[in-house]
Image (cartoon, rainbow, N blue to C red; front, side, top):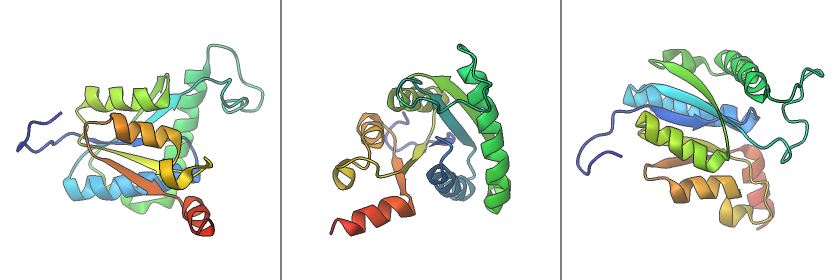
Length: 166
C-alpha cells in the first residue's frame, strides 16, 4: 500500500469472470489506465469447480488438474474478443493477464498487493437477493478487504434489477 501523501503508480487490476460484465469492467479499467498512464492486469481466479459445475467445461476437454490451462485459454480468447469490442484497450500502455487458483475475493486482494496495484476494478452482476445491499457477496468482500480503492462497475442487468426493486 502506498504511504499517505505518496502517489501509487502501480497497475490497475481488473477481475475477469468471462462475463459481459467483465468486459464492461475491463472497458472502465482501460479508461482509468489511459488516464493514469498505468499498466493493466486482467486477473481471473480459478474457483472451486463444485461451486459452478461445468464452468470450465469446454467441448469435453476437461481433465482433472487442468483447470488453470483451460482458464488461461478462456482468458486469451476473452482478451482477444475484448480488444475487438473495446478499441481504447489498444491505447493502454501494457495489458498483462494472470490466472490464479483460490477464493476469488482473497486472491484478488493478494494479487493486487503483490503487484502494488493502485486500484481494483470489478464488475457487479447483482445476482444475490440482497443485490442492492451487498452488490454480490464476492464484490462486497473485495471492497471490505481491500486497502486500495475499488471501483465497482454495475452491469446493465444489475442496474435493471436495482430499478425494478423500487
